Amino acid sequence: MNNTYKFLNLAVILSMLIGLSGCMHDEIVDYASKDNQTLEDYFAANDIDYWKTKTLPSGGVYITPEIIGYPGQYTPSENESRIVEVNLDMRRFAQELMSDERFDDPDDLVTTVFLKDPNYAYSMNRGAICIGFYDEVLNMMLQNLQTKVDTFPRTYIPSYLAFGGTASSGIGLEFNDIVTAENMFITHVSYDSTQRVRYEKDSLVLKYAKDTLGTTDPDDEDLFTKSLEDGKGPDYIFKDLITAGDGAGKIQAGDTVKVRYEGKFLIQEWTLRNSATGPVLFDSNTAKDNKGEYIATPFQVIMYKSLADAQENNAFETVIDGWYKSILTMEEGEKATFVMPSQVCYWEIGDNAQVSDMFKTIRPFKPLAFEIEVVEVKRSNK
Image (cartoon, rainbow, N blue to C red):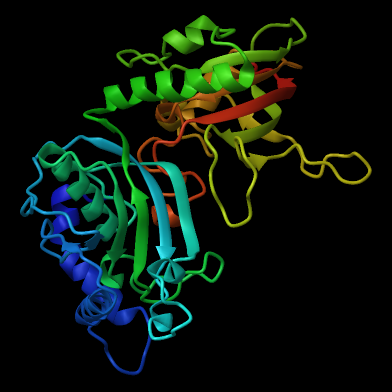
């Protein structure tokens, strides 16, 4: 991924290319000018005061209501390392209904929610979910220093700063849509990776352990306070034992294990398919058919000391670092819940480096909880 300088320098080129090519229309449309004119005409017709940002060279987003004072253009530091966590609620702006008298309230045009995440975090040297949202959060951070504004009620993001030619019928996003970010506020700012890890440990991992597992005392203190890798800080993996193993000894590097597991987010993740409360299951091989038999086979993994060890040994398939370190504390037949900070999961990238954060199952900086049961161990001959 590009660093902040590349992210900002390419913003104009990328957004124009996306906006001009995404729709595959017969004629080329200047979506930058079109969207700006559409929004400004709409604001004038509905007496909406706004503040158009000027922080990025690629253009600005429209923050409503108006905020007095312009932070000016943003120049990132060479060693930008802040990790920002915000409330994310993105919606489609139904501009095709602007002239329909039945929709005379601005709220009527932003009813389609396509992305919601109460704890969306990203590293500022990598960029946010889209350029416009990066710009909005940046202005919030700058405004906090000047006017102590803590919430932007609604921000309109032109398509060329949003998702341009990206469309997905599954989430209600169409080509070259203007989008809004609703009630955006910053939940936490870490100034380096160490601060982020400690924040996740205290505010997410231990809170989940207390609220969901009913304990703050891990069943493996070393797994929580130490790391198998020299020079690395604590892993802060919280283990809660459910069922003891067979007593034949812990799993070792080189062993092949088969497991049943369930993976959950620590905090409610909103999706169009899910309206439940509480932690959300994102992956599992524990489902059974109507005969009570498992649908999927157990997941098999060859054990290494850590992900780094697996990569150094050119492992054909790998799992996240937290899995290696957690399973090494288990025995055959054992079942336990492991609560893992994102540093031993998918850290700043998420589960798929090739797609936008919008389409990732696991977005950056997401602590996870796994319930793992070791159903079989094949010992190595080492």
